[in-house]
Length: 514
Image 1 (cartoon, rainbow, N blue to C red):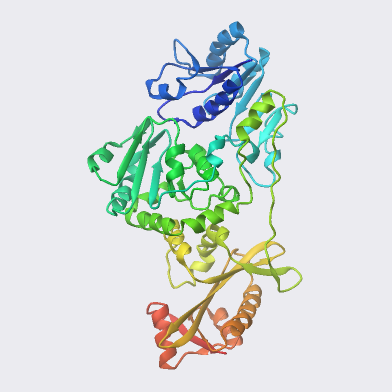
Image 2: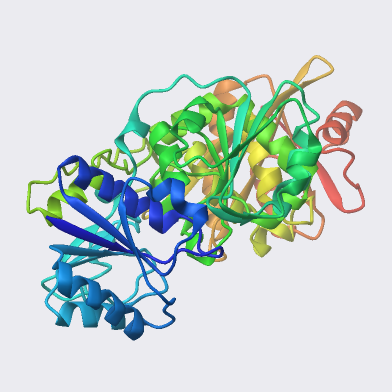
């Protein structure tokens, strides 16, 4: 059978589309099918990637769907492909209409939710429990829809167990990307001689000359590689763009600090978490080299903790994704997974209110809630916390945190921490809401449960707290729960030590003795 692949290649596009097509073509070729790629013009930067396949080039580049489709048809009419596979953000439904009207079978790969006219639509993005319905109104009714993690285009070899080298970090911006954004972070990290830092420079990369000028003994520059398996399989941490390498790293169970460098890489945080990717920052945060390097070192320190979090992902991407796509075109059986959503242990406080332990999967929602304006106005720290700061703190913190939910909706976080001061145990706690609509009745219920729980665990400890003098309701709530003004010197000293010298003019100092 003949399979023709169409994509556009340019400096601003990168290699994601091409690598997806190459994986399908590789499987088809191994099964004795003919695969041909169509490009606008010959590009020396990608020759290493396509050297094993036939290629056709247009005499002149095309700039619109109609011209491009007609140019392709001139080739298809002569060779009569069994399938045409399109993967390009720059070619859309007008291109598809022309190819379909000429009677050719068409598979389209897309992940930005556009209208399509094709026989098969492939979008491996997980979009929540309704993933399978997202193209109901975007593609013909008879179109076969290959949606979600069963169709992730990752080479199966990435699913093999690995033994990473300690302190080895790999940076990549994909096929393209501006390396200026990594300069501050890399310069900070390279001062640590215990680190092995590998930087992948894609064929369309920009502003990377400084990497050669650094001449650091613990820096390895990687250019011209068409496959990153050997590099990623040795790494302890991947730092880079949320492109195709994201899925390869997840398959390897390789901890990831991700960021987006293109609009199409912006993905819903909850959906990334579902497949095991929890640590994502804005690329502009990388300009803060000191704090980004601090986070990277923290992620290395707790890499096993992150791997466990990834292993427990709700949705598993399939090692048979590419084979499933090929089998769909060849009308063969596919290998589909059953996703197992494990139940979380919850304590019932009332018929519809529960509380549970916070785990690492709550890392992003915890920060989102903490930074709500309703919480900020009563905090000791007035500024919103950045992801860089939060992630670094989260990985090493020893707090016991809990999430209160009402009818399945997240409503309030409450936490406590035990510390010793001058040979005496003290307890510190706090709470903040997840929604502007959370009422103080829920806070009272959570606080009452917390005090009973900690009294059992730490019967000899003294609770200490600070409350803004303007926050009269919370002061009254704590007084109702048995807190009183801390007037003894030891409690005051403990409060100042833990909360880093809060202002007595701004805050009331409270304590509660069990």
